[in-house]
Image 1 (tube, rainbow, N blue to C red):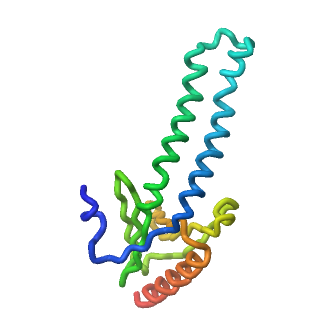
Image 2 (cartoon, rainbow, N blue to C red):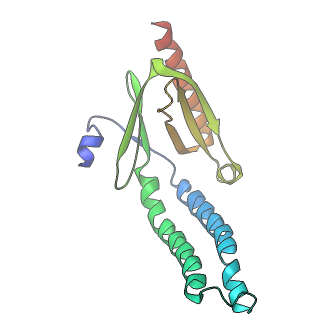
Length: 170
């Protein structure tokens, strides 16, 4: 599937902040270090002789796979962040993402029930937030991760206003 099919050429897409790359890479490293600490216990026990019956190849393989996944995550993250975008259209909002598999969600303004702005400690440290759009559908959970905090609040208000206007017209 070509990118032209996923993204209508007439739309003006807005990309998320490039600061999100650093946030996601830091989160990747933190998660990787925690996973590495857990999966390295058998290796440490094997090397100290406490658990000498444990296969040495497995004791080295599992931490190696965790390290490899962290390195791959560090390489892929910039591409993933660059692929995230949204477009406010006349009747709906489109949210797109994906490097290999492109996903575009289109939510009519009249279907929006409420909009949340969420920011964890790491995202707040970088001045970013995540905007979550809630609809009645259990399958639709569009979110825009990596907005600047001020932009997220303004977009929340704008989407809420457009949703109320469209809902009032029903």
